[in-house]
Image 1 (cartoon, rainbow, N blue to C red):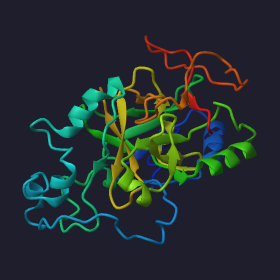
Image 2 (image 1 turned 45 degrees about the vertical axis):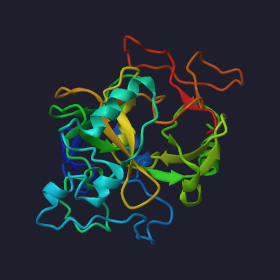
Image 3 (image 1 turned 135 degrees about the horizontal axis):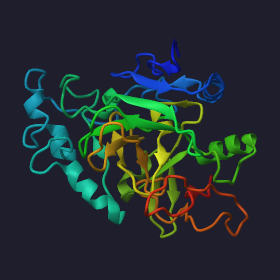
Image 4 (image 1 turned 180 degrees about the vertical axis):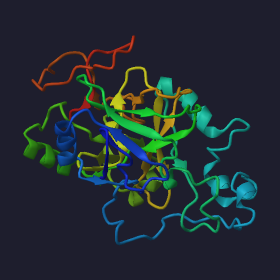
Length: 322
């Protein structure tokens, strides 16, 4: 990270993202504390085994490089779109908009599948979005309150537009508990950035999925834990909001382990702070501890919600399994 002076780092991604990610800090002390923890910037989550194995799990389309702009939005001609649907076009309406309409009801939503490395289409294909990193200019800053660091957009964002990924290390639950135990905060809802994504899947997929666990109703769930504590992108700085402007979706490219894409739930104004509902991760079910008091019946501590929304629940939810 290179400091330019005036309390601003021009780009904490050091050129890894398509657009600079600025960070503004009020004191050298706060910057030192931050850099002592967040030691590595990444664009996409690190999946165990994928560093050495780059093979794609999915068949690709055969859309040519000269016609991909049109073909990769056409379900009658693109194999990827025919199989998984087209989420990113702004017509008919796009599937992503329909999924956003389901979000308030916590209805199950399918993952997004993008064109992958097996496809013949070029990097400019319109069905390649999350895999290219964030394209919205953003600024990380310290709120000066108990909410700590946060992120704001530097231009207006349309509903349904991709904002950034929530990236970190993909780890198993036992590894997370081990890390938390080492920090002296195991079993609490404090200082925990881990995002737990659960997807409930059909039986024939169970043999190829990465992490499986039985849910309380007997269904099988694919669980993806993303720990952005030390290795992460700017998504780690986006705070909880009980009235969020972001929605999260699993996005698959080459691996069965999904990336987590953060999309605008509504139109977002220039300069607006970003937030997503920590209890609203797709597929969370009943496993996220409800926010109904400072301590649970097991004596586990939890954090106050400082988002200030009119519909605030009062306390931050957290996954008691971690």
